[in-house]
Length: 442
Ligand SMILES: NC(=O)c1ccc[n+]([C@@H]2O[C@H](COP(=O)([O-])OP(=O)(O)OC[C@H]3O[C@@H](n4cnc5c(N)ncnc54)[C@H](O)[C@@H]3O)[C@@H](O)[C@H]2O)c1
Image (tube, rainbow, N blue to C red; front, top):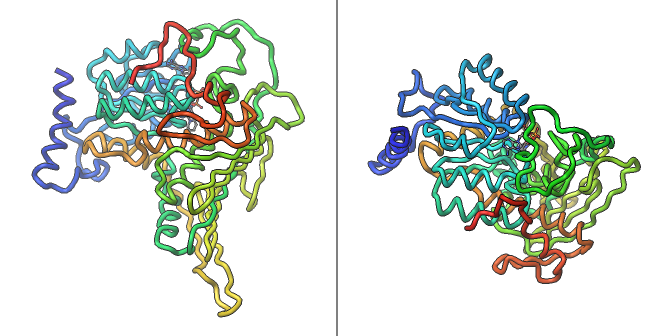
């Protein structure tokens, strides 16, 4: 009967659209408790950090119930279950295996907050089970997994929101408005940077026994078998190619996404120029690069991404940020502030644009989750669908591949899904899944 409940939500949305009603009213403006048919039952896979943040944002809205939590680490699972009980007064069912969880019929939507190497498999499993999905960024850990996720979401027609929450951010929406209404003249460059201490990884520690309560086999999943080392586990998996892409992809997808949005680009890059190195003086537990300069030439502008892990400061005295450089002004922004720096016109003795500052304390993360919930009801496309998640992920994966195969210029043919100038790079398009896991066929 639960699938009927879900179908009801969906049909109500379609019917409303069909008879010409204005799209579904955002539920946070409802005066009273939502009707049972407006309730959304959510589950979370991967509970420790960002996934729990996503879930918590969703539970700040009245119509959302947490009906299931899944984590391969029992300690994390129990701690987060207790937090859901005390903070939100809800008692979800608990699972260590997402496949078992997906048999629970009353789940409408799933948040995926696992490390990147699991995103594709779990997303596809959710879509096949008829669930809507909010999957954290980067959308996947390889080019081919991104392709599969796009095709799977198109086939199953479920709602998929990728966790590039800056797409819902007031600051960045304002930046896009200024750029797209010509306030900074012609956009010529987007320079972005991310430094951060964490990008160099942790101090090296020896391998050790698997902690009690952790299903390490299931944590590894499709990734290669390795002896257990705590530096490859919670949080710090980011620095190992089997599970993540380092600072390049961790922050890169958020930043590059803004450069692409400025010109509404939703496709993979054709050409990527990359310098990639490991130059931090102290040896750390890390395979990914600590120093990179990446250039994405586009037809009428250029995006540059610069990262220097281990440093805490950066251009414009900001650890990370974006400078949108136009003929008439430069917009400098991070997630909390935006400043327009106009150019000076020597002839007219006037500024070429208006000086402008914008700070907005509201949290874009909450807005992004809200957008997902609204789309679950309206069945409209969310602000960051898989096509946009793929475009951003492709930009950073190609740069990482360039560094790994030491090929400073890579040319990508999206139609053929191949690099035209490097066979070594082509070998890194598709990950080799460890048995019994197989790459989904889409
Ligand atoms: N949008 C953002 O701003 C933002 C910020 C931080 C992290 N993230 C993304 O969120 C994801 C998670 O990052 P994190 O920092 O929370 O990682 P984390 O290591 O802190 O948490 C991951 C959790 O997933 C669990 N897990 C691993 N495999 C699992 C499986 N097969 N089934 C169930 N649980 C499993 C782990 O035990 C752990 O509890 C990553 O993709 C990361 O890039 C996004």
